[in-house]
Image 1 (tube, rainbow, N blue to C red):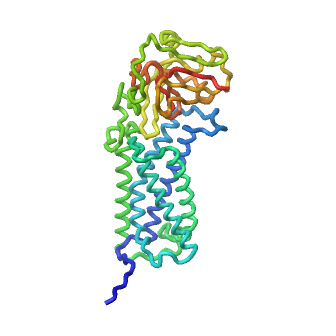
Image 2 (cartoon, rainbow, N blue to C red):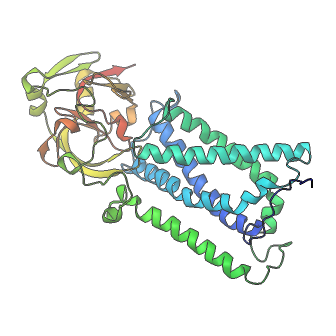
Length: 378
């Protein structure tokens, strides 16, 4: 007897438009927060030419807040995305698979949306653990796919707007009556999803929101673990920096009236203290007390113009962030220091001994360690 193949039939409940809409609006909000804060992070790390000189240095906790929200929202998106995909996956087996050109384009946009969503949350999560099992550079690819995801999401919402509007709430026009028992099951499902989002958030957000640090059981970093009670992402050994003898260290300040300082001469300059956070792109952050020489004082001595940018060069021999630049807002901020001490102690090698940069509202990868040169840029 000839057997015919038919697409599978799904008779389970909750694979419906109302459930998909309920989860989708949460996921849309989380994706929006993640996208906006990701844009802020990218501009802070790689400012376009028109913004390079004037990125704000205040509030001092600005980057800590936005990057903490970026990572927290990305992690919260994981259970929401899984729940959303579970709700809608029977539609992948709809028959016929393509009914028209419009339907084909719609399915293609959904494929792009799903692929981009999975890629972003997966690579973002692995980045928090600093594990990169792929051959491409994480930052530019993650940034590019974020725009792809945003465009696919906007297109999907536009196409599905009538269905979303019809199922937005129980009072929405066009909403169908629920079969008996579905209402309770839907509430149970949504409660479980909300609990999962809460659980992953509470057990990871403590790496940046330190009042919850004791609950950060799933976070890849604990804000108290590291040399001198502060985490590090890149050790002196990993950066190729050996122990730098104090008597051999020199800081070169290049500008209209260039000069060089020994470590003893740096220590003899007026010292200032600032309470500033280290806020890393992987999502962890912690405030500490830093003591050192104000960069603005060094710029005044070298005769730097008021709106000059500053290039900071590390003594490390390898690494993508051995050189960073500051606009005049950061360079002239009185809280921006070449730090010599951390929490009252001389910097350890892993924290940048003998000298490191610390500035307000700045990504941790740009808080250059083992500083050997400041250059005034016209």
